[in-house]
Image (cartoon, rainbow, N blue to C red; front, side, top):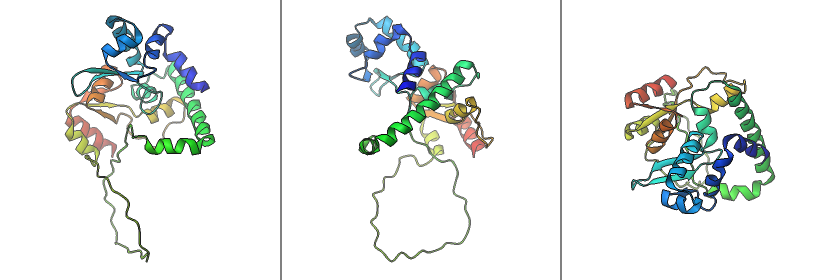
Length: 236
């Protein structure tokens, strides 16, 4: 895709390409695996990882076993786009150029999906979700109950109950909580097409190791549970 290449050319320095190519066969690797696949020493890998992580291209956090796993991130969902625009904007020419390129990339993706819909749909149906958006508006609708008679036997869909049903429960579940800016609104701000609703911008949460990653790389800031709950209330 033309605009994906344009974005990558801006993001990646020529001397970082060899580390990117090391992820060709396996997108998640330990340091020992990376040393073999990249044929670099540990110091060189760390130096390049630090640079690429700051750009939202590599995720570098310990696994549940305490071993640091290095994962190559995509441009979208969740990767470079989200991390680039969730940090505080300077409204620089580079940021504006990035916003335009990503908008063109979205158009490219739309066209590609439409042209290959039948091929892509089965793949998307089996792909696990990488992120989820949870509404924060509580149910407070008043009114009379109504009954609608269908007179037909309906197939009951399989239900799966999420472990955390709302944002507040998730906030209370985690010790490490970070907040960044809404990347969708920031992207639109840079395009000169700001959200018509003057809603708070800093309300995009990350939790656990994602929170540690986003704060380490400067994409977000750590907050306490009380601060997170206040941000949540202000956004309602």
